[in-house]
Length: 180
Image (cartoon, rainbow, N blue to C red):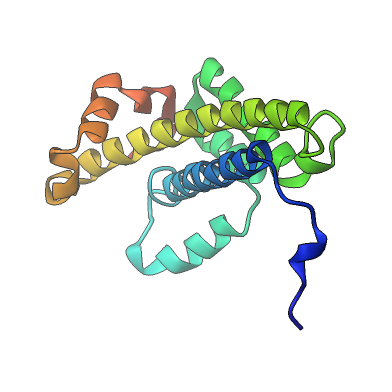
């Protein structure tokens, strides 16, 4: 059955922009989450990790909530306290965004003021997602060096983003308690 959308009022430019920012936020949050998951599979997995076990480990990791994955990370790594606060805030803001933002009285699409507040929140969440993604990407790059596969990853060597990550040494914010 086709739905007749003409019964809804026209969306204002402000609401359309808020929807755009929400879409951008979903994109960045998903990238950050995937980076955390990939690090749990490759960087912080048990020392006897075998490529043959990748799919079973991937299924196990990806079936957990982000909060549980980070709790697991805390048991396998020493996390810089400042970055640990960022992780905690990221998870809280991510969960609020995914589960409650449009039903909370302080945020939403009902009027331009609520749209502006929502966009401010979403932009802050994007900043947290970007930071989380870069720290875990830095861990992946460092792991690739230690594992001996870095030189085969041609896309890394002339990439400005990866060069910045290596210079900033974000991987030092999370130290694995296992030996690679």
